[in-house]
Length: 234
Image (cartoon, rainbow, N blue to C red; front, side):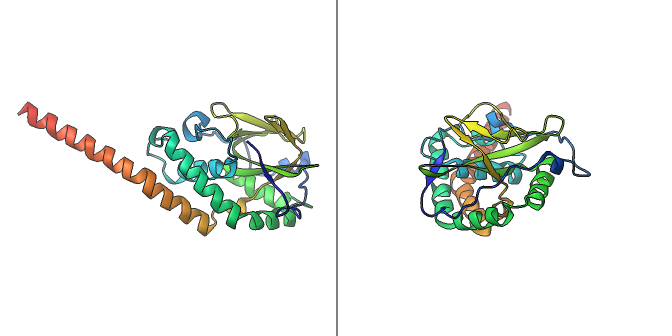
């Protein structure tokens, strides 16, 4: 679900969509994406407005913990809600102004920010995309996670937290994207947030508390089971 911010983001400028010519960047192409919305995204509802948290943690977990069970297989819905709530609170308190400054800086010419964004996507690293609709109620923001670019169609394949089970698409030529009942006509690629030390530390702490201990318990139980089976065969 989209999140409405009033006042604090009043200086957030509308970021124009990129013209098609910016997509002709040497050395880029259609990378084979392994991110799977049904495994690597959250399974909870975004009704509370946790879209940034859900995209940020999904990205971080997918990149940092490959080889471990996918997010949905190791974290139940109750824990997902706790993780999403804490990260969204951190975002609202610490990252909104950083995000706004970054998007304002590049809203006039998005070539550099899009090149950084696209380099990550084609390298197999999902990237956060910020969408905005500015109407009578103020700025409505929504975060999604782009994990593949299809240059032949000029579309981004995305994980949209409003849709828990299927991939969605942003058609860059259409210059708009609709999620639920809101159509967004402005876009920003806030790569500055991907490696923010405070955000990373927060996600690492949540992983250690909610996930690592569970995986360790599973491993210990599996080892005990194997030992018991071995003893029974003697």
